Picture 1 (cartoon, protein in one colour):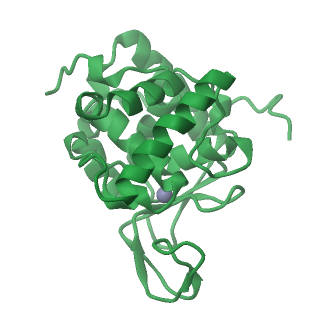
Picture 2: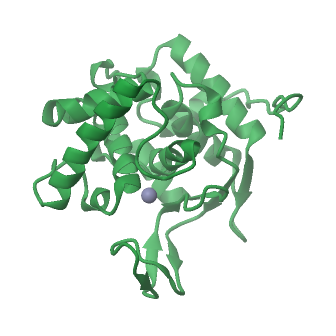
Length: 253
Ligand SMILES: [Zn+2]
């Protein structure tokens, strides 16, 4: 479908920045120029993507703003088309428990019917992004913990741009791609072998796609720690996202 003529009609409320700044701890770490570009990305996310509430849930404008602000950060130095695989965004109030048989997240190729609590999902290329509001706002308020469900699920959509969820987003040059695979494969194997970075939770070892999503969370939330602990990994992420969060002045910390 052509995007031609689908210009966003969404208009931000007058107090949008106070709302975002009230919940997103890092918002004012960015310069006015960067915040203006984040705002433009938010307008597109809010106007061009389909936002849905889980049944019975009141998805407020404040919630959508706080989610969109976080999603905008990943593509601040990329193009908005990096989100062309993002369709519906479905928001639930709190942790969702999945029931019924499905592929196991912890054992590749095995099926499971254990109930599983999830905070977000972006499982299929054409499928929705599912987010849990209480976790989403907790992550926005506490980046120092290095968990961010919005970064995680939107990173999966970026990973899907080339048609496969393999932990490798589309990279500009062959050299970049080689370096990416070399560095990420080493870190992933270290993690699987039990001596990976302490900054990366075990879930990053499930598969290469989860590795990329989890590393993205840590890169944006704890960039300085990641750079100190795993400089090569930090460098390939910085190269891809074209951002250097470790060097950003932290106005709020
Ligand atoms: Zn994931």
